[in-house]
Each structure stands twice: as C-alpha cells, then as structure tokens.
Image 1 (tube, rainbow, N blue to C red):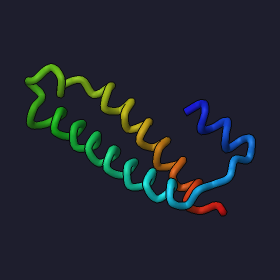
Image 2 (cartoon, rainbow, N blue to C red):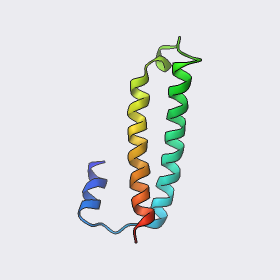
Image 3 (cartoon, one colour):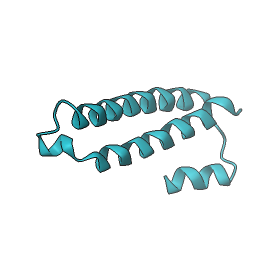
Image 4 (cartoon, helix red, strand yellow):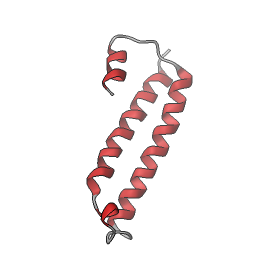
Length: 77
C-alpha cells in the first residue's frame, strides 16, 4: 500500500490494463469478504473463525484500497 501510494504521489504512469485487473481483483476480494462477514454474523456464528468480524472488516478496507488503486489506473492516462 505504501509503495502504491508513493508511486501515485510521485506521478507514476497509470496503466489501463493493470487498472482493469485491479478493479476485477478488488471486486472479487470485496465480494468474498462481504459474504464472509454476512455469513459469519448470521449462519455460521457458532464457528469461531467466522464469528470474528474484525478480520473481515480489515480485508474490506484492503479490498477498498485495491479498488481505489485500480480505479486510478483505469481512469488516468
């Protein structure tokens, strides 16, 4: 995250193809972590790994960063 943010700050060249892949990867990541959070809070609340929402929320933040980074690359030439 620090490297990507630093590269954007330094004005690194945006790459459309990388941006598209990052948006797809971020969307899959966000969707799967959202599903893990919902399933963990409802159906599988009795299983310790699913019952802890903090890791899923942390991964949602990381997925949001991937989506933002991908959006930057796909929108800027």
